[in-house]
Image (cartoon, rainbow, N blue to C red; front, top):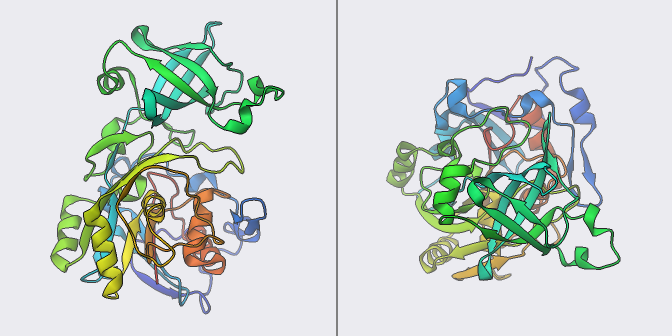
Length: 392
């Protein structure tokens, strides 16, 4: 049986003895490798470790999920609960949060030939264009749909429709490619009978994938500090925060600094790099970060979205500037991270580009150790799962 205790356990990876049965998730430990194509961690994720429902449905408060704290300089691992987060932060530290709010970004859709689909809104572009994803229905959730064509009309509820223009990725616009069977993401125009936010409130629903068995209201996909609607999927690293926990952090002297990054769809194909997302870093947030670094304090990002936004405005000397736009920054170990010292994040799927970002911060060796422990101790993955704090 997997150890799911919420009690704090201070474990040194070099002397740690496995306490579960010898064959528990043994295949997962043997499967650890670095994917040469993406330079990310590859492992087997057991289905029982995929969180299929929010903590509240499991009889827990939001902040009662588990927390694994890993010290990258020493490989020390601590297993605790998220309510203990203040114990691992210090007065003067800056916690940077993404205050983007999640949209009801999924819509029922139909092709002219009657094929039923889901249309997922991803990124709002200039000129009121959208990056959208089409997905086909299946008995096992939804799957990417590749048969759409340029100029096609996709019907939406209550007389709305979307017009597909061109493939989102320029390399898929070359005429000699068999594009009709390759394109997943499209640049499209929406034609809606009412303003977007009202339309999504009436006819949309949250994007979710096969491991989430039920449809949950949009309130389950919002952080308590969300201020501005725009994310296709929840910036989930901040989901476990509660007003009480934030109050406790502020009382301890931890600074909370906001920014915006509107997340796109997360259903990337194997080896597909992340695409542009809109971000905005206020001058006040950049100032707090620079002041913390100048005084030797730590800057901790809440989520990979925060790292991506900050790396878009931070130079190689670690100086951050205010800015906004659409970022195409991809954080890898070769590129490195210049803006933050720590990261609070969920547990990420095998081979995901998020793991390349974690390796850039923590190093490959430490990431292997931490994820081996997460598997052995039965941490839960995905947006409704447990959390991982990486600190120096």
